[in-house]
Length: 78
Image (cartoon, rainbow, N blue to C red; front, side):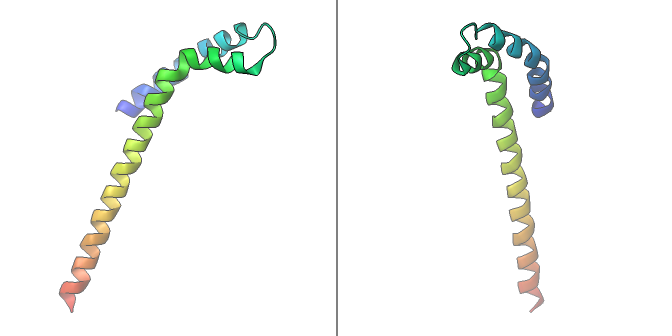
């Protein structure tokens, strides 16, 4: 649920961040665009990456538990 909410916030703020990034580039320096863009999208992007990493860690944990369960069943069959 956290991932969906963060993704929604990220998508809603994307046009605003793009606009702010474009307004920051009056002299044409790309670094100013990214500074303005990340000023708006920095926190939602951070949380989006954080929740995606959390999801991957949970999936890895589930897969590891299943592998351990399968190996335990093979050893008990012998």
